[in-house]
Image (cartoon, rainbow, N blue to C red):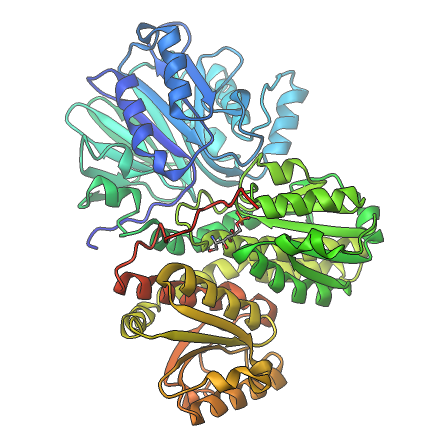
Length: 629
Ligand code: AGP
């Protein structure tokens, strides 16, 4: 779609300066971004008074609006302000962690989207100088730092300069929007690796994380570049870099409607979420390697306890279960620990052998899946230690676990898991590295090397996404197939299972994933003329024996009439003669290949579903979170 600017991010942000009541415009913008998913919301208005008027509430926007009404809208009267819908990353979704965050005087307010990696050091610096912080968030540190820069020193009284001086100290990804009681005619915003766009209206200006916040008012927009700051006033805007030098944004016209804007210009949320996977990976890994060590989010399990672990269970459902199957290969290889991956719905009924030296890893996007939650409870009753891998801050499963590693895929609106699945796979690798590090089965430099390879996967996924028009065409051609089989070996086997699940849940088409070595033990009887069989090839440079055996498998099924669709590493010429369709993916380390080989299968399933006329975001009979057993 022409002019599609894919703005990604997690929290919803909107700032306004203009001729209208800022409160009305800001609340309207937050409503337009509700689709993104959030767990709290807040507003700050520059009313010309001594302090800003701020209101914030956990839960739905209605909670915030009730609080605003209770205070009285007059208290928020003014033509400059900002608002925020939060998807919690640091700190549970409660009022005190909701944005905007203020400094001690209440004259500076900040809303933020992203993750500030060095916030712990900044927090310590502030506390050492006597500042009392009132929240668990990384964001609050910026409000105090900006207030301090504005109050004295070379940036005193200059809000843009104060914000720039603080931005130069931040590490990580952030979109910051700042208001000050002294400056009721302007709003300042800055970005690094997180979306920020200016809406250019008539005698009114907007800043937002998502054009959906303002396109009912204007379709003229300007996208800010990396490390840029913008000051918006009623009659215009000014962009600089973080050094204060004038800079240019990227003007564009939003040529799609509100519904498409919510989907970043895509027809479905799931298609947008497939595109967001590089970001989801980068955000999930961000901040988890500090001073040469892998760090988890909340580790209430000591390193000694991790060293005592003599068995690992991964319990999960659906795609999360498949991410656990991938983890099995990595953890066993890196940690030399036995790993069992069990469907959460089966786990407690099989009377598993657990004790205090068992580590149970519970993987769940929603953190509310009843089967997985009950498995966690059973594990804890058996004195096992539980580590949750979860995409939803403060959900039930992490709350009932001993340790937590949050994925940062952001809200996943599509029922079929895509970016959350990839983030789960990445997080599970992190768990493996943390275990190997604690147990000494990998030297620190080896852990560092594996982490660096993991970080590089974000760009590998991005490169994969650029080559998928071929897969979309294939999907349209397969739309009338009766069934599709998926084959894989080693870490390709869970990918085959995930590809089959995607096709089942999106296109309602029979699909089955097999370990390719199982073909000769029965499933090869299914092969018939023109039956599509998707094969996930391992790297020819990895376990060569696996590659050779899979080439033989493909030859066997092709000889029996199968239509072979091969997902293979670019340049894998050995497999080319056996592929009726060859989909090439970037060459990556063997254990990490699921992060790229899954992507074409997601797109294939979505395209077949679209060709069959189904709603890709809301497949029949399915819910995003299955909170019943
Ligand atoms: C996968 O596309 C489905 N959405 C489903 O299998 C999902 O992965 C499963 O229900 C587990 O959900 P959870 O990660 O929220 O626990």
